[in-house]
Image 1 (cartoon, rainbow, N blue to C red):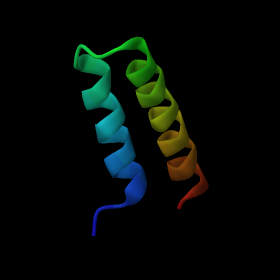
Image 2 (tube, rainbow, N blue to C red):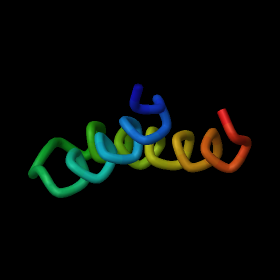
Image 3 (cartoon, rainbow, N blue to C red):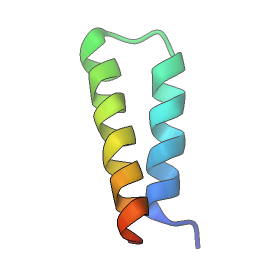
Length: 43
C-alpha cells in the first residue's frame, strides 16, 4: 500500500505545475510541506 505521505508529495507536485488559482497553489505547497514532515516523522 502506498503511504499517504507519498500521495501527498505527488499531489503537491502535480498541483504546483497545473495552472490554478493562487489559493490552490498555496494549498498544494502546504500539502507538500505537511507530506515531507510526515515522511520525516516516519508516518
